[in-house]
Length: 150
Length: 150
DNA sequence: GAAGATTGAGGGCTCAATCTTG
DNA sequence: CAAGATTGAGCCCTCAATCTTC
Image 1: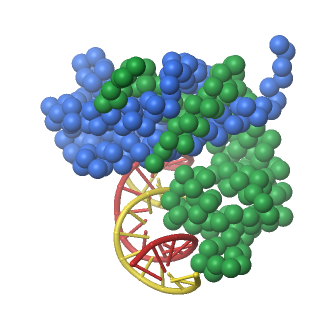
Image 2 (image 1 turned 90 degrees about the horizontal axis):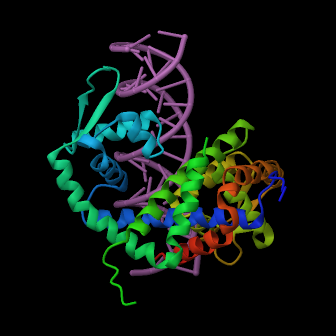
Image 3 (image 1 turned 45 degrees about the vertical axis):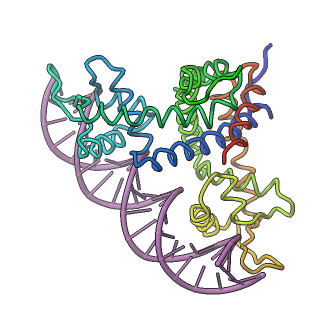
């Protein structure tokens, strides 16, 4: 099918609009559920979780920023706040003194353990039912979008 | 299947993470494409577009805010800026003097005509290819998520 | 008193410029 | 000079309080 891509179909436009709305609402639900438990915002969970899955429980600052689709400066501010709270810490990178490594602290692991069930429960409650059997289809399509970005 | 929903499956979690990433990247692409053409941000397009599709080309302020999944105060600020630019205007609501109607101006229609092709081209380029044949599946699932929000 | 809208205060992100290290 | 990180300025949104109208 040699279809020209010079304008989006109505189905594509509708899918994007629906995605925008679903994302915004879901973000709000999760934020409310976390706050109701007296826990930090979602962005903190994303950082803690990324560090937990990383080798040595540490990541470069730019890797964190990229993972959250933020600019380096945004990542720096976020890490500032989390470090001030004692849940992560900046450590020197052996071999290249330009890069700042970020490492999970004991307190950070503890916080992650508190946040995880609330986070997962929120997903299960607000996202899961609407997905039905299409979860893997959605995941693959979204990964494809993310990968195709410049 | 009497499955308890007390925690999310890995597929659900993966789908949410992928959605987060895809949304953030897409938002950035569209924003860049608009800015490269010297056009206002995406939120302006969403407002103009919603007004265009509305009867009489007018909407209540709260309806605009809800459509963009914003708080009333956020909507008020956004409308402030757009009104200052002359693309929309607040008009009195006949019958209830509490509500502020927002109406598209001639300049607003003109701006919408300039933004639409750039917007649609961005969707077609950055979103369409990754969707493939699943556009309608995505759209329905996302609408379901949006509808199920409290 | 409740609903719609607005305003002040504050949080969190981006852009551009800067500093340091490679 | 390029790359990683940080900082100052500014934008945009939210929360809480307030005002008006029903």
